[in-house]
Amino acid sequence: MGVFPLATSLTIDEFEQLARHDGIQELLDGVVVEMPPPKLRHSELVKRIAKILERHLPGARVWTETGFLIGPHCPQPDVAVSHPDQATERGWFSGAPFVAIEVASRGNTPDQLEWKKDLYLASGASEVWIVYDKTRSVVVHTGAEAIRHMGRFLSRALPVEISTEEIFGSDGN
Image (cartoon, rainbow, N blue to C red; front, side):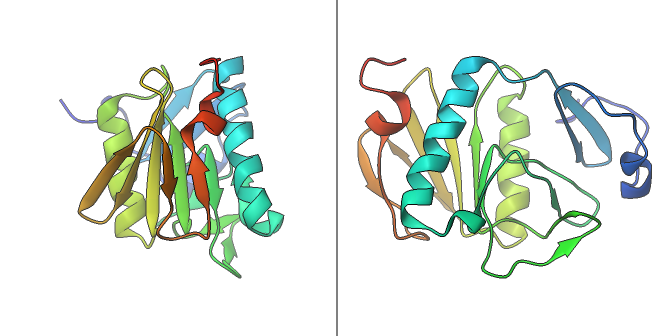
């Protein structure tokens, strides 16, 4: 069985015509992947990560839950840092973000996160972060390398030092 459930393959044109839906819809490998609205904890982590990045980068480059048109795919990373002057196409950013950040949740499987990570990196992302609340860790992927961080770490792509405690909170909540 593939990473995404078997379904009729959609084009970007067909994806754009779908009815709006409460939650997140992504077009990945021709399949519409629907996720329920995020729970509060997920949203808190997304908000914290975005605030950390906005302290070090122009706010106009930090995005939450924004679509990126990558060929026939339209993923929506939880947090993204766009390339300087990144073009748009059809109302979405064109191509992969400079840095894509996904917060692992009940709405995505490990195989789906791996697939999205590979898509981002193959399409021009410098780093992909996968944030795991259960283990209070962040795995940073840069090409063939993946490093799990459970404390302070420096981004290789961004002028940012991150503390996982700042992301997850000092009490784990």
